[in-house]
Length: 74
Image (cartoon, rainbow, N blue to C red):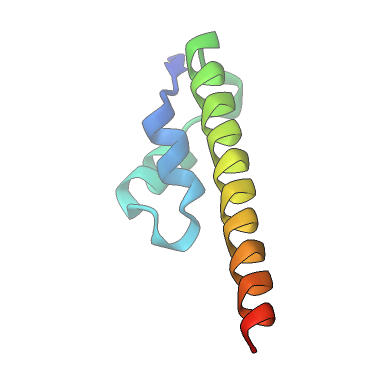
């Protein structure tokens, strides 16, 4: 039986040790040759990666600006 894996399953598995055990067990029981995903899922994953990158850049700028500001007032 072929299985179309959705974004929510991939996201859950990515949680590692804190992933829901029933999802991990279900996924582990599936033969790899029967696992598929869609171009929509790949797009959602790519979008999530880009959002994380942007957020990290914003946080880095904020932290850097605060450090510079604090150094000037010391």
